[in-house]
Amino acid sequence: MPLIDVRNVTKIFGARPERALARLKAGAGKEAILAESGNTVGLYDVSLSIERGEIFVVMGLSGSGKSTLIRHLNRLIDPTEGEIVIDGNDILKLSIRELEAFRRQKTGMVFQRFGLFPHRTVLQNVAYGLEVRGEPRAKRHARAAEWVATVGLSGYEDQYPAQLSGGMQQRVGLARALCTDPEILLMDEAFSALDPLIRGQMQDQLIDLQSRLRKTIVFITHDLDEALRLGDRIAILKDGSLSQIGTPAEILLSPADDYVRAFVKDVNRARVLTVETVMKPPPLRLTDETLEQALAEMQRQGAEIGYVVNARGYRGVVTRDSVNAAIASRAGPTVDEIAVGAPSIAPGASLAEALPATLSSTYPLAVISRDGSLEGTLSAAQVGEILTPSKDLEAA
Ligand SMILES: Nc1ncnc2c1ncn2[C@@H]1O[C@H](COP(=O)(O)OP(=O)(O)O)[C@@H](O)[C@H]1O
Ligand SMILES: [Mg+2]
Image (cartoon, rainbow, N blue to C red; front, side, top):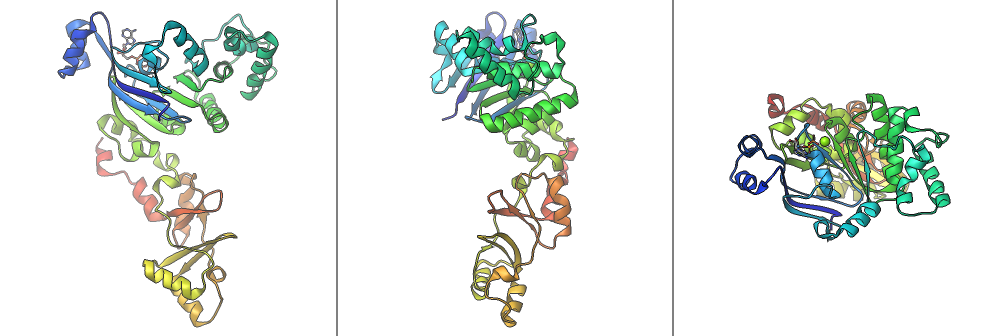
């Protein structure tokens, strides 16, 4: 079961949304509705599920409904229509007290403009959520100090926000949101106000933190590069409606409509796509077969090449010809001994990193995971195919 389930949510701002809702369902557009009744369509029939432990990015142009969507997740906004189910609970049914407890315990929020308390020190800002919860001072300060250290701000505990750079202030914002150990982290354009260099560092830090914390993070951005970098999955909003939900590779390789195509057309695919998203499935894997067994196996599977991976790890490549030749010369008892080294590559490497090796290797590269298993193969031809923009992409 997903942690967050948004079901057919529509939000219409302004008085008496019923008529606007009916007009919307009859096919009227956002502009027309605004002109007719003054109502603004914030979201229209948005459904999406967010899994535990993923970074789910919501992307779209300014005004597309990103903030409206994220504010529904902790009920800063109630929908005009639809349901929001979190951890199996319909949050629209929570009483005010239950809602407060839910916000305090399950969610943490990081804002674009940092939202720090100017008259509180870094440590007091970070400890704020625990203070609201009524934790004793010593305990909350000890916990806050740990988070200050985790985001790399040790030594700044007693400074005030105005004494810090933007990037440092947002680290405080992040530490504050994490200090209450929320299951869900809501980040609305949290890095958008930062300079590109600092922004990149914050993205790195978030990825690093997430690899240890495994929170469920809903991250809003208008920046596609940021979305591709951070998102396990990305939802793209246009005028309050969903255009597409997919992994970065799906968004890049199969954009659903012209809006998404326009976003992705200038992306450097080689830097964004990883080997595992484009590799071929695992080829014939040989372990410690005798030459005769290996040959029989290759013939049976119609494979010209076999990749030898045994207890000693990836050993290299054999071909039908090399096995035949070895049998003729009685060269060795197992395939291991005649395998020739061919480069391998990690599944998480970018295509840009993999390309030189694919070009210099006679055989497709073996894609070998950290635990030594053979995940697939990657050839220069495959990389070339992916990096060549298709006709419809060029037209966008
Ligand atoms: N409180 C509000 N009252 C009226 N209209 C609003 C309100 N909040 C947002 N909107 C409108 O809803 C649409 C979506 O806004 P928003 O969610 O803030 O977009 P984004 O975060 O993607 O820039 C916009 O047209 C915006 O003007
Ligand atoms: Mg916004």
